[in-house]
Image (tube, rainbow, N blue to C red; front, side, top):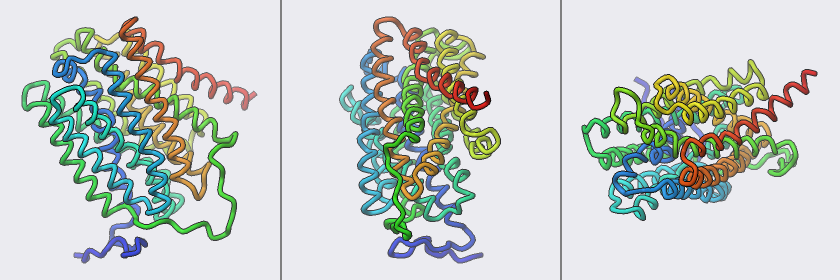
Length: 406
């Protein structure tokens, strides 16, 4: 048996660990961190919304506002992550994110009213702002260039595991195996595990400055506008789906043969399982190209919203909707990671953080507008109107593709 060596020196420099490579350690830490922060921390509120409605008497407007608080916390954490990364390195933000999720889970599990629920959702939501962007700079430090798209795809696809696990626990709640508060307590335990793994697997210390003195790319320039636009539309589309898709299915009578509340678990299980396709994002992009891949992703977002809006009581419609949305989310997540790395060489985490600000802004705007529309015109209308953002991207990207080929 190979004796286990230390992964990092006291100064944070990378050392090989026996036969386990730094790439594997980083990918593992990232997969677990995103499983927590983008699984139950970011999506748990939407998954458990039917239960929260019953427990706390939430209206659609309140639900939309609580979801927006979670995404506002995500937005607020992003600049702090960039600031910490530049001063102390990438390890601390990821550990803080995992701990923020843990505290948020505990707050939700012990909440006695809407205020406690909102605080817990916000704390958990902040973890998504801490736990993802640092892996871009970490990958530049310890992962060979050819392996970076695959490694970053693995990190982003950790979300699928978190979503599927949360959905499985929710099924247990639905069928009376245990109380929903116990499920959130389990999330808290996993959050602690993520913090420990991040402390072990993410390189410490700041990266060295670029030795050649070359000018670093600016955050705001013409060629990065498509990245930010795609990030905003992703955030808006995904946040609306997470907040209201399961709620719409339940409010419409659920799925035939299942308790109404179990419909949410079915949606998120389909979402998580089909999201595994995100692991192949690097290979798909290499084969198809970035522009056709973006067109397919946002067409899938739009189709998923239309299907769940118009046929919330049909098994086939709901499963296809969940699968399309899960695959689109995991694929665009990986795309944003390696796309920003290409556009911001030497500033991977900062460029990715800027893209995530776009995601966060869309995540705040989307459910706020959709929640207001739901209260005044119904969830069907709210979901259909929410297709505007992904359809706009699909049409813009398709037009660019056709123009290139003409």
